[in-house]
Length: 169
Image (cartoon, one colour):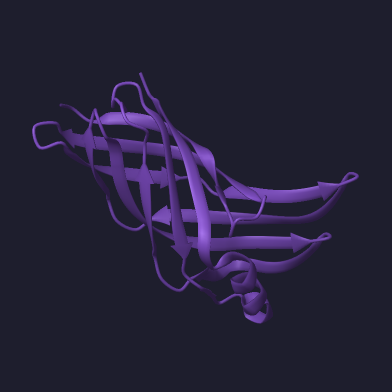
């Protein structure tokens, strides 16, 4: 079967908080249907998450998530799709009440997170669908005086991801 291309739309949550970081990008899968396996390439665009109250920006954060290895997984119609992707994160900028707190791209995860993704049973490659996962985010480094605060708020367990795969026709 030839490659299958998807638009990726979704979000991730940060340590079980209501804060959602939007996700957008693309995924190209190379399936081996005989073996029930696939590999793929994930590309995500930088995202901005923010909070505004009464028209005043409390904070905004620009995050770049990159896949550090190919997406790998397996598929069966009765069980669904299981995939694993290894990602790193860079916090490009954080502004609090209009003041730049982090900038320049040196604030990044010290290691990579392995994110397991799973669909509901009946997932079909030609139709796409929703994938969800829960993962631990490694600690951040290079955030200057804000490193401890960033790790308190963002590193560790309880991070979730929800993405919809939309086939490109």
